[in-house]
Image 1: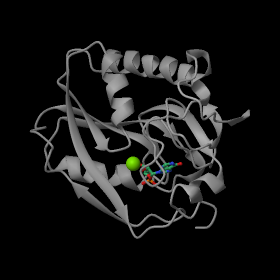
Image 2 (image 1 turned 120 degrees about the vertical axis):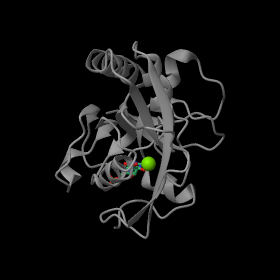
Image 3 (image 1 turned 90 degrees about the vertical axis):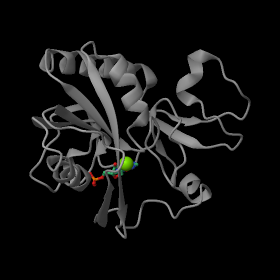
Length: 211
Ligand code: IMP
Ligand code: MG
């Protein structure tokens, strides 16, 4: 995994896009999964979903905000008719190692009765968010519910549930990009990167090393 300096001259040529941050600040970012790797894998996930849900009333339910980049790419990699819906979840009062209470807002969710729902999130970490999503979605009386995530931090998962579809298993590292944030920053990066602790503090937080 190469450690890369992000240049402050914009824009960089496309060949260097893996090291691109649209910000005048300089960040160090180790690229864990490149833009090309994500593109290939999302295409495979689209094919997998298209096979499984052919002829079925599929709704992909994106969990705000982290899933939006994946959602946009995945629905275009899927060749069966589908509907898109959004739900929001935030965790309050938790730390990096223990999740806080999950607050779910399903006011945007359309009628899911009798539909085959795939809950889509950016990452499956402890798994508590997706467990909460399953609970919330059950109330809508769907025909079936499965889950899909881009990343699965399998060493940290503490629930019985596992994602039905996932892009990549990753080690226990805090990652950003492709929808994943730190303090709402870095979601726009086209790759999955491991930020430098000092840069996280500069981005307005306390880093991720303690709790
Ligand atoms: P879980 O409930 O522990 O599975 O956590 C899921 C949520 O935590 C995700 O939807 C993310 O918002 C957040 N999260 C977990 N790990 C990371 C990470 O490495 N980077 C950014 N967000 C993360
Ligand atoms: Mg999230």
